[in-house]
Image 1 (cartoon, rainbow, N blue to C red):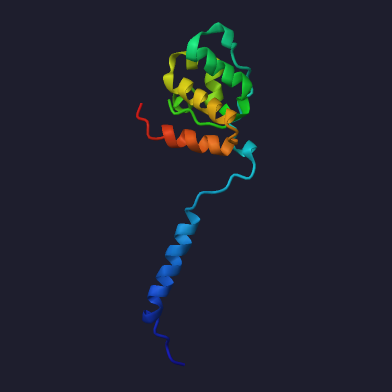
Image 2: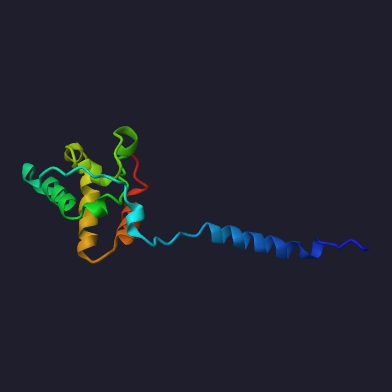
Length: 134
């Protein structure tokens, strides 16, 4: 039985492996928006307690909790305050003192009003805030 020479096939094998590796790195499609949820169940504080953009952000949390619960808060409060999602910032007064929380909520609300779904909103918020240094 003769041994096969694999040297001529090496570029083809390498190309196949690279294609497989790249395919596995592609973005996954979200089939169910509820799979993005952080799991925050506590009620948000009343927007009537605040004014200006802060009140608008707390109102957004009241109106679209499922969206805010699907977003990561880029002030990193999950790490230092144990928050489950951006919605967690609105169950207490955390967001009152955080421009990132307010900006994210207002952006999400605007995108929601434009008819974007949760996955699209999350993608745009991640794109805008993921490079923030805090």
